[in-house]
Length: 341
Image 1 (cartoon, rainbow, N blue to C red):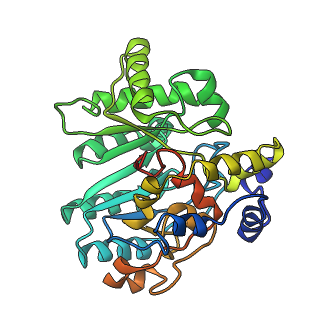
Image 2 (cartoon, rainbow, N blue to C red; image 1 turned 90 degrees about the vertical axis):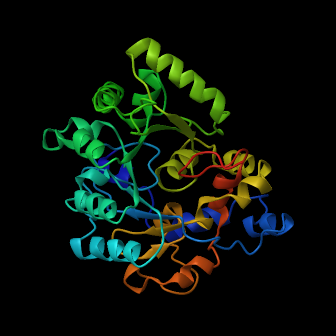
């Protein structure tokens, strides 16, 4: 398969939505919400401004919902980054969550970190770990530690085969070395105040296991095998969009996976979904309810549509939903902060 077909498995986001909406025998997500007394789903305030600074990445992962990779050129400009800082300054939003792609490859990443810290905001970096080994990022671990940035890093498994299967040959070894660099700066140690959290997502068409149990497995195995430590592990369900949707269709698992998600709908998880307390900003400044809606080109259903129009009215908005939302509400729930129920 060529890089182009890996990065762009669908002609358009409209095609993905058509496929999702055509799934047989599935209830409408909105009907499931209504049955739980949660429709329409509304914002409960904005606790996190999640900023996607672009799709450039040094990896090409099979499950990536962003379609990120080395050949992508979508990048947040300095002007848009300044608007994001302006929104933080004008609001009481306590956290900025910087993601990508590999967000550190955006030339405005460090500007966002430093300016947010000047404002006293908590900063999260969604790191793929291998970026820490790039020659141009030799000082990245130290920069993150100096600014007290919380690092949330994806590591599909504590064994090489499963990780490389999902993220590419050699990525596991690089990830281990990346964690080692972060540990050397104090990350993951209970007395340092520097938080390193890992993210687990399944390598196939099934739901993640109990977050607490697999966290214990990761802590034991990473310490025993590599002498590495971290704070917490988050489990995230693979969303049926982009590359993972393509995988489901190619392997004939699409209908069964969607049915599995719908059957596992959990009202408690739905009540705590991240879109209720997060506002997502695209690389071009367009606003979304979450990063997944962003990748499906599903902007806010009403009100301001761009970060330049940021308003406290966004704290009371109705959330735009579709069939892919079953992914965040199945079982124990799934969000950028792990399980929700």
